[in-house]
Structures are given as structure tokens and as C-alpha cells.
Length: 183
Image 1: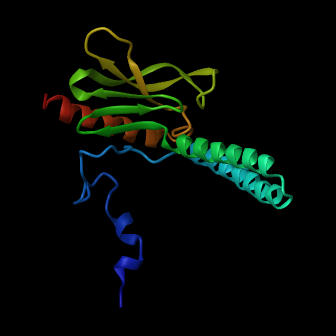
Image 2 (image 1 turned 30 degrees about the horizontal axis):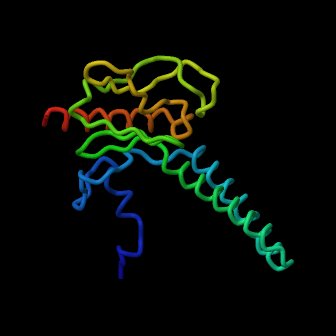
Image 3 (image 1 turned 120 degrees about the horizontal axis):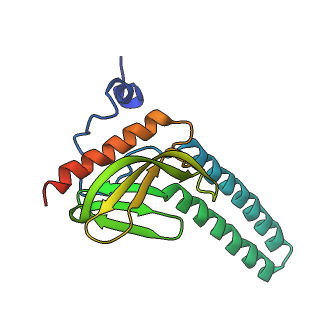
């Protein structure tokens, strides 16, 4: 007796580009999966936080309340940083495009987007100061303003994943084409 609700093979039979019936375009969504570099860095941060929480328990049993509180606060900061690291990236919805950074989030409505295109330019390697020649998906706003880099092929999401970068860039360009025309 097949039990399709217990297996994941239904998701692999359908293409990834097929919209699900409950697909809500009003909610913010990331048009790609987080890359292995981003997930690996967050996993290492959470592993460090688990050791810090273990140290907190040991310090608390040693009756050093202030030191345990400091260690708990530091572990909480590491957990929050790991969660924010996983949240970073480009998000789209019917309302616009949102670029989530580690410390800052920028949202631009589709009505203010003049163009979204892929360009060859120097890009940052894994978000570090070192730049290499690569591809970037940039959003050019209407009027004055600098273009906003949405995705790069050397980021933590797309390093050594050229096909994933192309799919994500095409998806964001399609969202722009669909909702920029609706202005």
C-alpha cells in the first residue's frame, strides 16, 4: 500500500519551477535555496553556541551566577548571529524585492525598479573584501540612486553553483517582469 504522505518522492517528480497550489505571492520568499557555504557557517556557529551553552551550565553549577549570565548572553548572541546568517539574501514578493544583509535590510518596491539584469563585474568572494571577476544580478532603481546588487555568483549561496545562480537570477528577473508591468 503506497503512502505518499510519508515519502518525499512526490516533490522530486515535479519540477522545481512548478508553482504550488498554495503559492502566495504576497509573502516574502527567497527564490533559491541557501548555499552550502552559508549553511555550513551557520552550523559551525550553532556548534560553537552549543559548547558555550554547555559551559554556561557548568559555570552555573559552580555557583558563579554572573559568569553564567555572561556566558548565556554570549551564546544567545552567537545563536542570533547564526539565524541572521541563514536569513541573509534576496527575498521577493508581489510588493517588491528585499535585500537582507547581516546588519541592514533594504526593501525596494517593484514600481521603483527600472531594470533587473545580470552583469559581469568585480564581485566580492564569499562576502569578504577580496574581489574577483564574476556575475552579479543588479537592480537599477528609477531616478537617482546606486544600483543594488541582489545576487552574485561568488556569494555564500552560489559559489561553485553556476546553474543555481542562473536559475535564481532568472526567477528574480521574472518576478520583476511580472510585477513591474503591473504598476
